[in-house]
Amino acid sequence: MENHVNIQFAATALLLLILIARFGAGQYQDYAYKYAPRLRFDSVEGSGDRCFPQSAESYYEARKSGNTDRLCNLDYDTVAAGSVPTYWHAEVCGYHLHIAYWNFYGYNHDCDCCSGERDAWFESLVVKIRDYSLDERLHEVRFSQKKGWYTRVPGHYELVSDTHPVAYVGKTQHGYYHDDGGTGTCCYYEDYRNPSDVDQHMDTWSNLVRFDNSSAWMTDPTTDVWNGINSPPFRDDWDLCALNGCTGGYLWGCSTCGCHKSDIGEDPF
Ligand SMILES: *[C@@H]1O[C@H](CO)[C@@H](O)[C@H](O)[C@H]1NC(C)=O
Image 1: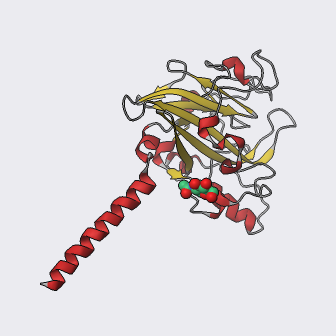
Image 2: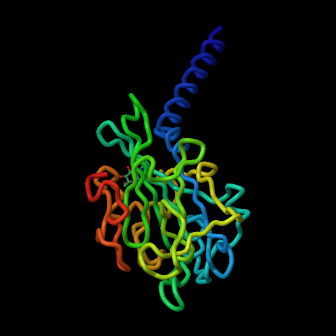
Image 3: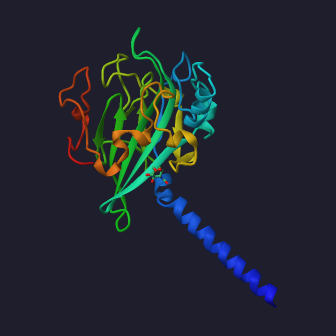
């Protein structure tokens, strides 16, 4: 009899623990999956040192163990099969839920004959779910590229399967744009992004990893591993409630001019 009660007690406690753990880790996770972007790549991505995303953790571990090789993922199969993670975190801002999705690239190729290449690059897309608990709807989407960003409202970006925004990925610099095109220079909107019939893409919801401080790279504030840049948790745009709509000029030029394509200007995101 006493054993029976103990087992029941243990089972109840275990169930509670599982529920608590699930709630902690799973907070906002359903939203993260539902609104995760599809990345569309240029038709020549995967050739000539034009890399697909890869695991930031593996890159970090390789550098930490002294590997100085170029680490560039040219294997589309890894992307198509969902074995490359996209990292996310979420923040409630008033009635709204902001979710940021981050990808890591091991190498950026030159964007013209001879400039722009570097090792290690993070790129992000942020979605705003308005009234997420009462009247949930995807609204603004913030696309980041190079040193800038801009924000689009519904109808001004593409969706797949109703809830997943589409980001076109620059061929060499891996910026995220709401449209395809480009003329193949280093100017702000000109990195090529022509998926063509090849249609290489990555459905990021097939492999999402939360920024949960569970692996060393997520909590390391140093920048040498990343060739001088900060990893996402240590960047100015980590606080998702403090974002604005765009940066850079409103006139379309070669230098940073994100505001040219922003539907909300520089207003708070
Ligand atoms: C990760 O660590 C940072 C710094 O200590 C903390 O602010 C943040 O809340 C942690 N994130 C999670 C998901 O635990």
